[in-house]
Length: 591
Image (tube, rainbow, N blue to C red; front, side, top):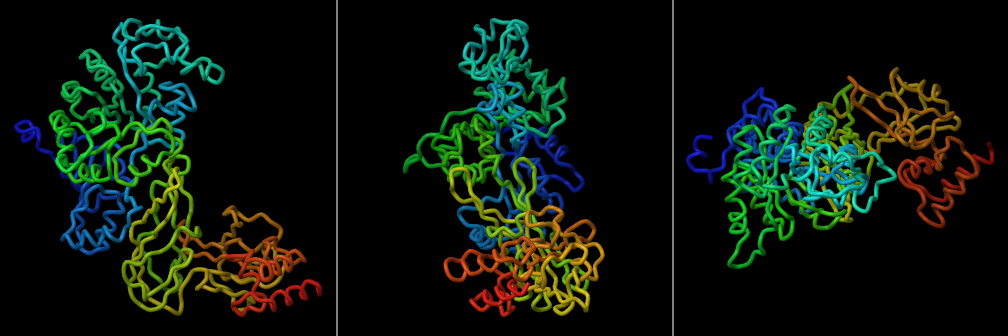
């Protein structure tokens, strides 16, 4: 802090220590006017990194180990900057990711909430954005005649309310007399009682949530800055708010009043780069006033290229880009390019289907007798919900080392030789504009101790069923197999059978496509996909519809895949041919 007071163009880095939390790191860094937090390896978790980045801090880390796996692990944490032991190691790690990959998701910010779902800048609109999964909301703030900060974008209330008049010439009570129905009274029917909220009401509404609140001060008058600072302090929300202004002095005033407050300087789009005006030249022009105010950049996305974003990231600058509409290609490109935050009036377009990151359910495992052999992979959305993607064809395992020691199919690890393997999982998904986004998990270390006795799920020696670890199938012979009859074939007493949709099995008969699952300490440790031989339509019965479907697959088109195709291998020779169809038909006719 002292160095920056002497020369404000320096950029500060706060070095965190073991035992600190994201909250204490954020407060310490901002109080020291540092916009970058350097984390030791022990603190570099996805949760801590994401929490610091939501405060618009740049996160740097230097892995204790210097191998490629350590670099991959640090990158997958979402850190902005990974300090590598050598340039070649950094290049190799970066090259393995690909052009459609991002190792961290930007903060998705609902501009005025979700104004297509509720009146802009209303409490309902902000709630809609948060409920949709927005990591932050942006509210426009103006000052009333009686000195109360209220949420309103325009200088007047004419466009979005049932009344008229200048905000600065009206008291809060006068403004509250009118209804906030949005432009052209679009929400008069669905939100008849909505009114213009005060800043206090907004902060109180989201006080107990984890949502970051960005406040765009729509004027540079000192009275507004002071009133906003007072309100934030009264609500005890300095660590949750980011103040934005077009005036660097306003931000300096706010930081003086609240040293732990994060701020961002609002700027228009950078100029077009050329031979005589490089990306770095343009960034310096934009960055200079922000550095003086110890602020990040809230900048119009026009002319912001991936090179511009990379130049900012390399300098520890968090770029918040405004304001996108819909699922645009420009927003998708900025998402992949590593921008710190993206502000959009259609935040639900990205949060509804977007995957924020993926993670395996374990970071290390040992393959031996009675040990887990299953790795579950989950996609975490911006709304915080997790969806298992282990069986998704878009999810695959990528070995970093030791590929000769095991194979992984649909999450199941099959040992090949004693040794250690390191693997990470890759998931290819789509952005709202239809373009590709590739995500990687943190590495998983697999130690193979035995290649003969392994796995948790075990059949009784008397069972006629088969376990095929190489393809993760449990082959069941016979029809109309009840749940209790099925489970009686195993030595395990605590197996759980799920249906093809991943829900607890409640049907009359076990069907192709179900899974049998074993858990160790509450974590999935082993799984097989059930294949009832002949049950190619997945209803647990052997009927004419099964052999007709199998015939169609063989003669007309390939109609079966996965477990259902496996169910068509009636003679268990590893192939599905006319012989299987004839055997199944004869078997059903005999029945």
